[in-house]
Length: 309
Image (cartoon, rainbow, N blue to C red; front, side, top):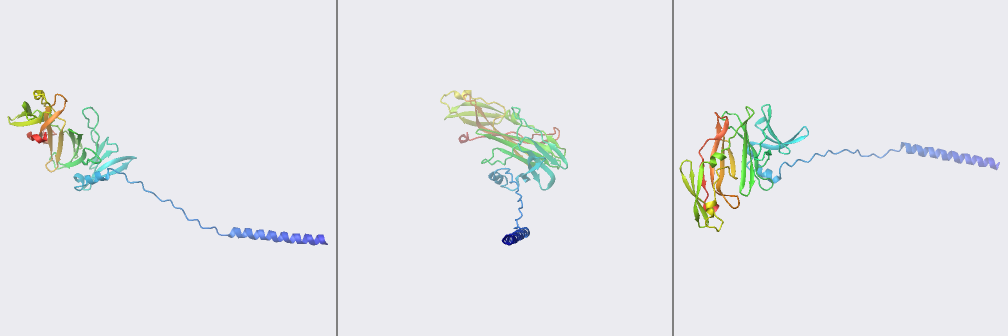
């Protein structure tokens, strides 16, 4: 009897336990899961490429749009290009490669790669970009928009230059956008240098006195600092009628001309340097017969005062 009662109690407890577990499982099944906030990926835009330093860009735009161009950058087929555009010419751009090796122009549906420019050593000049600001970039490199041929159509010019102490060199290229071809520029440096002769006269008060004579027979008195104790050193100074180490070009977009300037002086026999005493200037314009931009004005001689030599 006791055994039967014991078994009854055991069955009852087991039943209660199983019912409780089932209820707990049911509660756990229907229990609402806490809401997990949806995680959205924030799209981060790539940082804007710094085309030039802030100081250089500010200098470039100091007078408004540089030479009437807008300056920016664009990516095409995975390659980055610096880009010059003109809002009034929607089908124009000048693109320069990321490493400044190549330049490409588009105008009125036609595209052309600009010709490479080689220096005296045979290496290609880069298409450097600079408005002349000296703090972050050196030299100068900018496009110009002018009618050089006089046909009423725009021509594209690119003027570039740079140098250091006592030396400077500019070069310029021009392209007829209507014909999509380069306009040759016949640089006048050699004929400018040959326009004058220089004779040394002697030394006075630490300066070598010189007499300059141009091709028209005009004469000019000039001097350079001697810098030597020898009384006869002035006799060794010579003038070489070749392109000097200081040449500059400027573009007059209104007149469609180039102005050229070259410093001239005497070669120092001891240090193989040139002491500049003056400047030769002239003008270049398009010549229809030659199909090129050539010297179109007389050569002018300017002599530096003694405190500038």
